[in-house]
Amino acid sequence: MSLQTCIRLGFPVKVLGAAGLRSHDSRRWQNAPHLSVSLAYLRDIFLYLQSRQIRFYRMAGQLAPYLTHPDLPAFHTQLDECSTELAAIGDMAREQRIRLTLHPGFFVQLSHPDPVIVGRSCRELAAAAALLDGMGLDDASVVVIHVGGGHTDVPAALDCFTRAANLLPDSVRRRLVLENGDRRYSLSDVIWTHRRTGIPVVLDTLHHRCHNPEAIPLLDGLKVALATWPEHVRPKIHFSSPRTAVRTLYRNGEARMQMPLPNQHSDFLHPFEFIDLLQKAVAARLRPFDVMLEAKAKDVALLRLREQVRNFAPGLARHLY
Image 1 (spheres, rainbow, N blue to C red):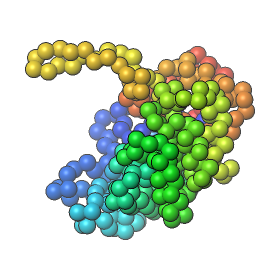
Image 2: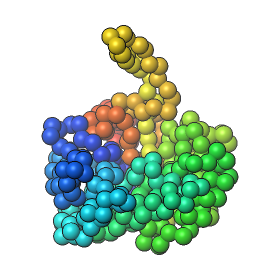
Image 3: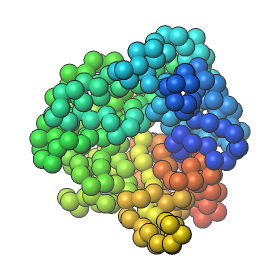
């Protein structure tokens, strides 16, 4: 089965399965961090991904440190300074057939009523798109965003988001995909937004279980979300399992139990829920998609899930890459 018809499994940012692999240059601005350092780290990560046959990876959102910080203009030219290195790392990703994506932080809020925050969000998204363009990556390398905060009124927030998104340059808009939330902005909300902006929808399965006021069955939600993507771009979804374990916290020498919350990611992934979802997707002949696994154990969780699928659903395993 070819890579074009298989489901790729990916993980975000931090590598736990090998010592010494850093996702980006995380030094403070006083120590002059730079994109060139992050790209050197990224090359090492790519070699690790190749050794584990992992073809899907979410890069750190801070790959170019302080790139858009309004008070640190010395960092604003990193993309130009690293044009050669960016092109080389993009070539490496294509050679290894690694799909790369980005997911900027919570501070990207196109829905915010404050125009200053919206302006800064637009600059951050433009920088993320320019970084991916500098790598020469195709439209499958997307930038995942949420509707954002700043509003208690969901319709008003969706309206603000729609107006801001429609003012973005085409070079930025073509990279954007919109994820449903776990407390606000359900799948129906982001589908409403897609119809007014054209931005594809990333279904987050755990978020959908946590916030699904319309009671849309998961497989139906998956079908709807996949249909929002252009034909030439492979869709992606997010899959995670809720944390169920009690944690013990220590403060001033005293132990305190912290109960799990359903929207918190677990360390590893529930194999049977994952198998069930993918078997239904295959049986329904849904278009191929990739799965970003959001688990605290990162690549270790991915490798364990891959092995569990081979053990418990060998017929499904041939659909995974």
